[in-house]
Length: 168
Image 1: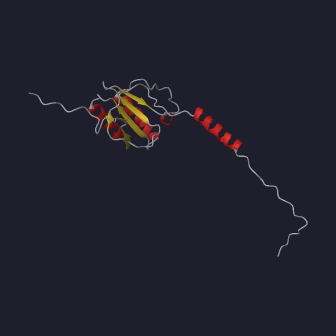
Image 2: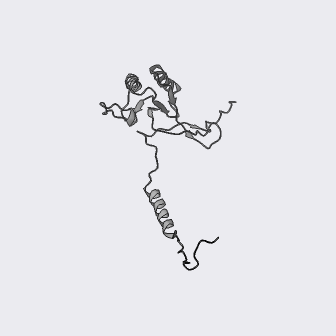
């Protein structure tokens, strides 16, 4: 059963799609995105020499409020924009804070954001006691999400100093 009439046989025009220009547009978009993309860089208030470890950490990083502790025991509190008070935005992040100032500012942060994450960055030669004093203050205030950033070193497991040689 052929329902088509034999007299009106017309050939259908074949539809073609020219993909060459589409490929060019895709390449131009890729080049545009590569040129205009800015990659996240570490931005700190000042340079600090972080301790290293032989274990690579895999975490999803977001901006966090950071307490910097220098080898001399000086403390700096760098708050991310979401953690800064709306009315008291005149705090200089490059200014040292005392233990009482640190505690007062962290208490106000705890009241606004009880789930805030706090990073403690200490130099390699920072005393352990200075680090533990800050951890103690954070725990007393009620922070539970405390972390210690470090730099990964390819120098083997541990990344520490060599063991001392025994004396004669």
